[in-house]
Structure formats: structure tokens, C-alpha cells
Length: 177
Length: 384
Image (cartoon, rainbow over all chains, first blue to last red; front, side, top):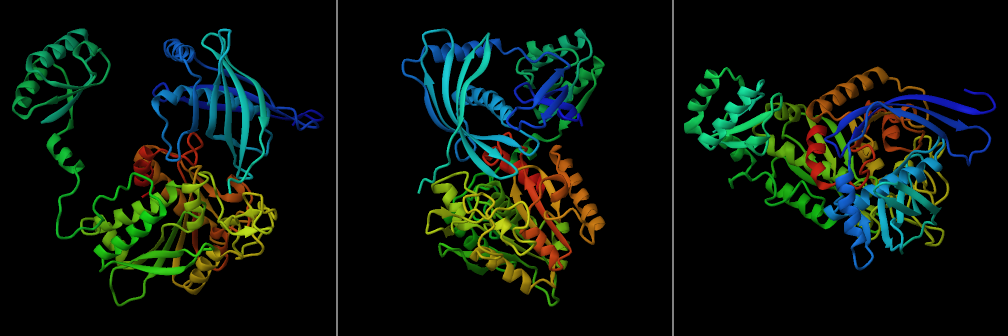
């Protein structure tokens, strides 16, 4: 407890890379939840004990596939109701996961527990530069309130430059009926 | 045919294995090709029956140690094939337990299950949902003169938790299919009756199939039909709406207009109240999170028999982990999850039923409510 500043947590975690045969690695992190301004995202510092698996080859294959599409990619409901993701959509799914991690971080406090529930909708936005751009509407599940929160996010990605969320807005819930 | 597990230790051993595979045309299961065999890495080879002796002799001669991974491949193949038709069919033919089923199919399944297991299974009417659908439970009971204690299990109180009704169906199938062959199951049923409610929130479940996959509540309309659904697991008469629930109909944890305001809640509560002196254990199945939760959610004050409750739950979690290594956390909801009030599990314990647990099945958020069908079998097997 850091008075006048907030609560700091020291964490020691074991993380699992589900894309690398569930191999594990250790992570230590410090998370500071700010007192006062509740709209400030928590500060996070972390270290991991080894290098992550190199994904250059798969990244480039995906990058080239999307760059060479004639029509912009559009998809809905990933995974579908039964939990299935078509193999060609898996990178889109993973990208959403990474990007949603940022959105979740920016909107978390000590009383929230968010998980990405589903990609409701994704649309590629063609760009003249080297980046890939995707406009997502994702559904976040918040454990305490059990709410499903739609969230729009604009995601930029490049094999060498990584993921960026350039814009994100919480969407209103709407009843289909 | 046998499958051998070998870990070659030296380059010479690797070479000899590669030699053996190519000469005897052996079926290499792991790795894919002989050239991928490396010292220190697992090798699995299937050896046709007539060559087993020759292969083993050759390995012995070269001081290569091996373990028999599968002593009889054919036996394994036979086991994994669909069961032959016999006069005693215990489960509806062709019903795929490793897929999610819509409500009409679950209704049909219940009828079929009772039809082909008349001695053990009866289907009973519990009540009606708001949209006027019948709620049925199955009673699995070994005929006997004595009154037996009851274990009650309900699934699907929250619509989007599809793995839950899938588990109830699996559970029934397992019990019935193995009743003849498994003495543990027979002994169990000698002393206990099983009451299984495969889908409690039928209207919500159907809505999650047809309209909104992540729907949670029932479909009772409020505010002149501008707002739908009560969280049935906040609607029971246990510190109703005191904490961890909402008076706002728009909320996913809306507690309803009063305790037991919903027809589905009343149907279950009335039944359990009537049988409470005979019910030994109450199980309610949810997802996700991988927890075995004990009372209470509304207070951190432990229940009177907390030690016993925890002991049994810890044993269950250990047994579960023994199957596939899946970790479940055990403890009271208010301590390890969040506060909630009006839950069925709390109410059941408060009226005197000693053992009351909420199971939150797989996973921990990677797939969440949308658990892929490949995980139905391992989830159900370990939970069983």
C-alpha cells in the first residue's frame, strides 16, 4: 500500500504459450492501481525469463495473404456459437486477442476481470502504407457483473512493428428483439 | 501389433532405429520420418505382430531399452469403435455426446433414455417455464424397497454455459452405459437415487441458440417488455438481492422482482423443499472458471459443516486433476470469487441440505462460454 498513490501488487506468474506446445515461462510483474483517478489504467512493469518463440514465418505468410486479397476481409462470430474457428481465421482471432489485451488493460481496476468472449465482427480496412488495418467489434465478458460489453477497436499490425490499437470505444448494448 | 516407446541415447542407437524402421518397414508413429529421429527424443513405433519378436531381439542386441506403450493395438481399435448393437441398448443410437444439442433434441433424448432404460430411469415433470415449456428431470433409481437418499444435479441455469447441459447428458449416459459393468456405479445406486435436471433455464437456452449466444438470464419480461430476463441464480430466497446482484432489469445479475419471482426458480425450489429431508447433496453445474464452490456467496461466515464440505470438495478436485491435470480451485464463493446473493446453492444449504456445491467447468477464459466441442469429452470425463 503506497499512501496517496495507490496499491502496488508484486506478482510471480507462470505463463503458458498455447501456440508453442504449451511451453511455460516465468514472469514477474508489478501492478500499481492508482488511488484517486480511477480512469487511469494500472501501471504495469514486467519481465519474462526467456525469449518467446519466433513467429516470423507464420507472420509473413499471414501478412502476404491479407495484402494480396482483392476484396477486404470481412468476418463475423469468431469463434462461432459452437466454439469453432476456421483455420484461416485463426490469425485474425489471435490478433484480436492481443489487441483486446490492450483494451482490457486500459479499462481494468481492482474490481474488474475481463475476458475476450467473442469477435462479433471484423472488417479489414485497406491501407496504402505497409500496415494492415482491421476494424473489430469484440465482446468482452466482465466476471463481476457478468456483463457482455461490445467494444469497437481499430487495430494496426505489421510483422516487424507489432500490434497497435489506434482507437477504441465502448459500444452500447442492444437487444436484437 | 504392439507400439514401443524408445528414447535412443546415442547416435549409434539412432542409426540402428532408423535402419530397423526402413528394413522391416515399420510404422513410425512419432516422429513422422526415420530421418527425424534424434537422440534424447521420444520414438513411438508400431510393430506388426509377426515382427514383434524379431524387432525386440534386435533392440536387445543393440542394448536399446524400450517400453511397451500399447500391448495390443487391435484391442484399442475395437474399444474406440461404436458399440455393437445388442438387445440391451442403453443409450439412444447415434446421439453424439461430444456435440452441443438444441433443446428439441434434448427433449427427444430424455424420452429415448427413459424408453430404453425403463428399469432404471423415469422422466418427471417439474414445472413450466415462462414461455410455457415443460421442465423435466430424470430420476435414475435402482428398484428397491428402501427409501434412499437423493443426489440432485441441475445444469443450464445460465443459458450461455452450453458445456453445462452437455455435461448432464454425458453424466446420464455414463451412468447408464456402465451400470452393468462398473461395480462402483451399482454400489452407488444401491444406496442413492440420482435426480438430474439437464436444462433448468430452457427459455434462455433456446434464446442462446436462436438469437443471442451469450444470453445468461431467463426470458421473463419486465418494464412493459422493454427489458428481459432475471438471473435465476440470483433469484432464490437466500439473502435475496442483498449483495452481488442488481435491482436493474438491464443487468445480467438482475435478481427479479422478489425471491422466487420466476417460474423456473419456483419449480425447482418447490420440489427441493418438498424432498429436502431426503436430499443429501445438491450440485449445480455452471461454466466457466474451473471452481468447486461451497456456500456462501452472500457472507464470508462459513457454513456450519464447512470442514466436511471442504474435505469432500478437495477430494473431488484432486480426482478431477488426476484425469488430465486440469486445476480446479476450491472454496466459498465469497472468498475466492465474488459476493452474490440469491444463489440456488446457498438457498439449498440454508434449508438444511448438508452438501451443496457449484461446479464451474472449463475453461479459465481462453474460450470462456464458447468452449469448442473437442473439449466436451475431456471436460465431462474429468468431471465425472
